[in-house]
Image 1 (cartoon, one colour):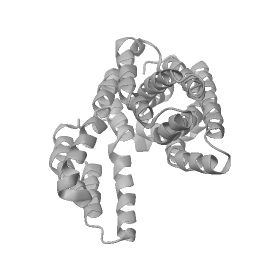
Image 2 (tube, rainbow, N blue to C red; image 1 turned 30 degrees about the vertical axis):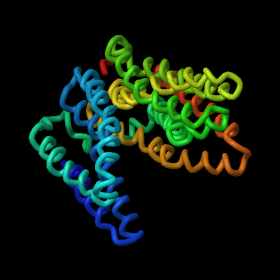
Image 3 (tube, helix red, strand yellow; image 1 turned 180 degrees about the horizontal axis):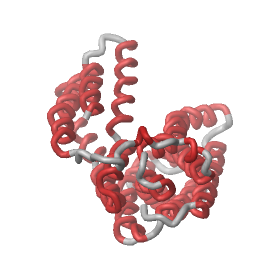
Length: 315
């Protein structure tokens, strides 16, 4: 709820920015608001509130979250010509204040007792567990791969020889493939331990990069790339929410999960810039692809190690 209020304020500040420094400061506030309102805090709330049903609830949530760009991009494109970028920011500030904040206040479960007390969880034993570091490494490597492809996939496909229209078409299939991955989780993978699901999904990461690298000689490999990349991205979003509970239980879930994903968030921020530097200084996208292929293999190996170390407990 506090994050929704900050979201509204920071978006309004963006709409009123008189100069670059104000604009930058407002974006920093927006980043803090995002950290308080997006998947990680939502997963923590669900895990504390739904107990053994948390995994199914997380899957439902990711279905809804997957529609965010489907709704927001067309709406923004529709209002932008008439109200401009400032008016667009103000529109979403109003929507956050009048829609998101009341929903949070009215419907978020009020969890009582020992379940929702992340501040009382001692993280020392968690940090000493090898499985924690394996999952953190896997999430960091996977975030690096996904952030690079999320920004650079279209120019990579163009460099491989696809037309601009075809590259955009291939990239646009990513969203539906993410939904397909979440359908697979809902339909059958939900009966499999989260760490094993993570191993299966992360195996698709390096395969997707290999398919992308083959586009230059086999253009139809682009569709194999987007299917593997999109489905693995959709499943691994759910994995981020379910693996911490499998490994360490639901007590103090928010603190444990936050510590696990923090390095990945930094990798997600740095990855596109590092890829741009490599492209500019190392002669194109092939070195970038080798780098993210290595990141995908590291993620797969780390998830496999975590699965071997995972206790047999319900997620």
